[in-house]
Image (cartoon, rainbow over all chains, first blue to last red; front, side, top):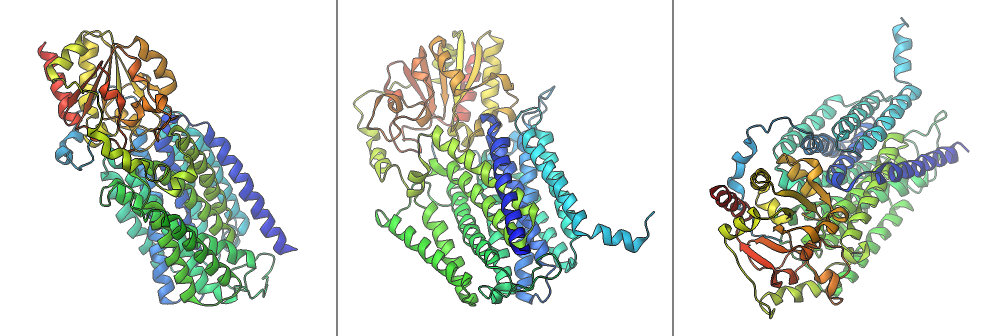
Length: 119
Length: 491
């Protein structure tokens, strides 16, 4: 009985979370879809927790530990990188009172980056 | 104050950890809601990040948590790689970056499943349920459903990792953007790989205690990720990234089911749901169905045939100069800028902003028409233009922009191609027939800035360029726009 209840409780959480995802996200305007994709991308970096939890298991051998270090590193990249990139993107939507000096354009040496002509 | 031992046991109790997780869910949901508007989005993202921090701290409190040095090492490595990557990436390379971050998430899921198998796999299929106290703890025999979710996560995570890396490679142009396919055999190969991965998974769940088989399953799933994404053309990459994003979310939720961790279930599933919506939305905007994208190519090879036709068209193309374009723009009442991927690769957004400022100072009414899939991701153009300080209210979405073209004097198309192609409306045989487009052909005249007559990512020719009221200004988007601005201020 306890087994079934853990599984069914988690299934209920799973289904409800899915509906919340649909409802919350359906309202996002088209223009914010790139930041949204990036933001949700950061949230699934929560797999980091999986790596952390497994580190608590007893009897991990050295190879398992090495794998987990990689998993935690990957998860951290996903979380930290994802939120930072989203923040940078969104920062650009803020209305800025004065256009500051465009230091961004200093890095344009790479503008001819690729052969993909105008599409 | 509570006595310390009591406090410690409370802090480490399941209830306290769950309460923290619940707070984290609320913050995730609130954060995503914040992302629904340009003014609240920055805060929304930060709220979600706080939620993530709380979820991580809660996990640190889990009973039995250990190996702190290795955890610190993993996190330090992740920060050392992730922070500079996120800080330094150019706005134009954002889609690739999202693909890469998505890929490592999928990779983490696959590895976690692997370690689960190494630790618990000997009990897969064993059905020796041993329940310590009231909760199922890892370490005893695991129920079958744990093995099922874990194996599912392993397959999907591996597909997502490799698929995302290929998507990254294509957008970064390390791998050619054109479809790389085995032809008709491709779908059979994909199917065989899928069946092999699933069969290996079932065998493992049923109790084949073989790590070699598990690794084999990961490898087959990796091949599947490559085989599915390689034949897909660069134009469809945003849809693919979004699909893989949803996949990673689902695999994270499956990991949560296997580990009995509600934070993983909720966050993973929300991403799975949102990713599915976004994927569908993008596919609809491009008049593509998700199955046909995954099956590869434009309805099987049409794109490649069309690509050869660039010289065959029996119309003539009128080319123009920056000076003529400047005059044309200066005497217009209303100008609509239609940006596309060409603007992104040339990093021309600041130059475009300069040009429109100059036009506005001459009393020309300027707006921007943004196709939902212009660039490589929905909203890509908005991000770039916002970076160049273009006021948000000048950016018009397709449905608002289209009726306005009839009263527009000049449409200035900068590096956009397929999203303006009238063939989508007029030519039923065209692979993009039925895709909603920006109807620039309705405006009185059109100036197209483009590097060459090469077809766009869809690999098909654009009738717009042969329209008598269209003039072509060949060149790199950034230098062409700057030249027009220079000519304009000299007028």
